[in-house]
Length: 338
Ligand SMILES: [Zn+2]
Image (cartoon, rainbow, N blue to C red; front, side):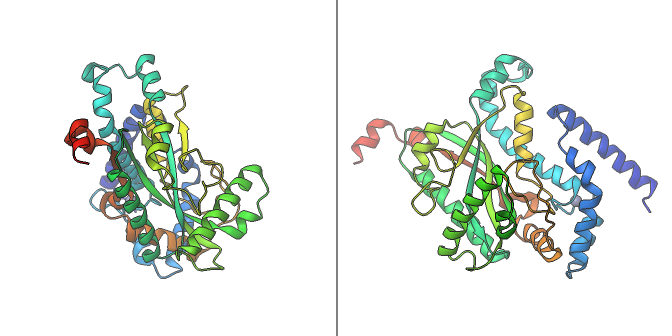
């Protein structure tokens, strides 16, 4: 039974959440209200039937005094989106200051057109990993090292990129049996990533279920700047991932018919899903027909629990490219050091 005090607290919390959502301009968890009950039942069954009752009780008992921080908890998934959004907002402060700081009119078309045109949504793919903590941690480390090297490159380009990693369970056998056009694209990409990941030793040959490690981010870089700086860093086996943009990652423009704040809110929650089914395409709302096995769903929930760390910080990233040369060395100094 929920005590009236608990109920009151939840009610106040719900009110607060609605205010936040209204500020962001759009309902963030629509889908969840519809499917929330079924998701919760699946999560409960998966965890309790696979010896993970402790984790289920943590999610079930989630309250203000003790948050479970699971993406399969409606409240905590929303908090995760807020954490990602806060990180992106920190990057925007200086750019927004140009538009008048505190007196900034966030509804003006001048502000929205400029900000929408000068930012992009970028997605990068790391690989497909066995469903265990050590494999996926190796993948995260691999990608963080890649960015460390990119940041050390000499470049005239300067930009920031901020976002978060997503671990998505893929079932290649289900994927190849799906026939629609968008699935064909995902099939080719996963085939390419699987072959590469097997060579890298990230997933066993013959495994058809694995964790697709990828990230979604916001950047103020142009596509040319990304191409320049990334080079072939995100290429797979000597070629770009099928249908990706020139830099080997997906680069998408923001929706020019939506406000910048709505776009940012959507991107901040994009990589935070409470999946219980396999997806057959990369379209955001798509859900395949195949439910994950209880052992698979339980494995994925556990994986997040083991890897994400407090406030999801192990999944967040915010990188600055080109700042070192700009702030430390003038061109003259850089030349004379050769
Ligand atoms: Zn929770």
